[in-house]
Image (tube, rainbow, N blue to C red):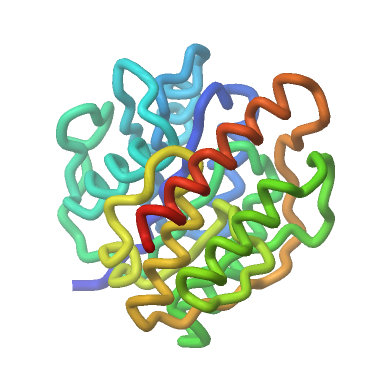
Length: 238
């Protein structure tokens, strides 16, 4: 049976961008099976995702990125939606070859992620991670530097884009890194677990855009939560 490409998109309150993201993914990756992990959005994220051809896994309350993406990945790998899936019953049970994870706020730039999928399919790596060619917004880099240090200290890998949510991988890598670390620690934990399991990791610079954070009180609180989750992953993998 021919393998399929699974695309799992993380989203929370992305009704204004999720449609463009899914359209770009569908155009760049014809035949891919699109899933959206909707972390209890308070807007029309799920509805918009459904109208743009995705299968949606959503639960009644927020569980954080890691837990919600774990639920969506397990549903997608099972070939059926299971509990909490809005359209899972229509999915056929097909084997996955390559899996692409990404964030729902990429908009039209999501098509550039084809580069990650191609790198994995060509056998250049087992896990390909996107680094944004142009960095927009951000704070003072404390959380980012800690994430790099946490990965290096636990597995020796020197990550340039340690918290990028844009990742393509062989399905074996996905299975080896599930369940994902809680909250914002998902990507840090995934990299550590993949390297420890002997998988080859590369980073590729791509022309991507996303909803950038700034230096407001809300943004700094967000980074504080990120730092907390990164520290939790670092400690749990000692």
